[in-house]
Image (tube, rainbow, N blue to C red; front, side, top):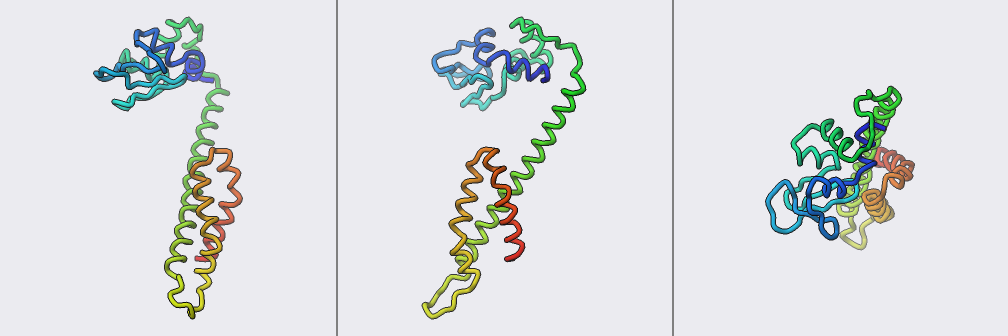
Length: 192
């Protein structure tokens, strides 16, 4: 765990805001220290803050950085001293920590690329089904239905369901859909 992660785990945003003189009111709302206002527009959550007025946001370290106009490392040192956290800030990170952080960053980047690609596959599939339904629709009762129209009628509800499910799902659920998405991608290649 990096020194930044440790500080974020050990102190809360509302506690730091109170300590540095911000009047935290009911519901952890306060006047935003970054712009003039008469009514509180900044919400302090346990691990971050957000101002609905000026859109300022961040974690506990960002808050201290902005209040005192200092670098992230100086903000961490100040929090460490003011809250008597006893963290050894000057100790360089261990090799395992650096490797773990790099591995997590790589995994996150790979997941984000997969998620973006998967949503595009599902969205393209849905639009293909809609396109088939419109383009090959029957205009006369005597028309022989095109196989693409029939295919779209059999799959459009499923395509809508998958696209919506993926959009609203958490990471674990999205990953559980990986096999279905790969099948749809193969099917798209086959029917195009």
